[in-house]
Length: 101
Image (tube, rainbow, N blue to C red; front, side, top):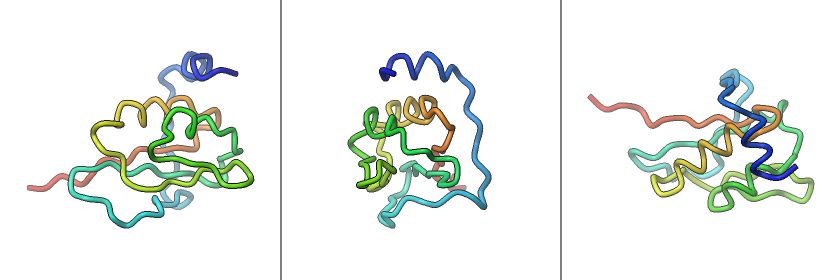
């Protein structure tokens, strides 16, 4: 399945993963205003679509599972949203930075 087919197939049905089943990005250098990409490990089946769409932030381990290397900056935010929507198992979640009063 191509990336374009995956994007069309996913539509707008993005279901947030349960917080207790989601692991944070491995990089603790998230700066103010940056989004965080999280992986729902039990739901992930190592299709690798996220790494195809967002190689700036996601790489794959030797088994094809995603490795999130850092925060999602503004320049790749739209691609991160596309990766979340394209995930065949809805195993990705984009977390917004906390709002400051």
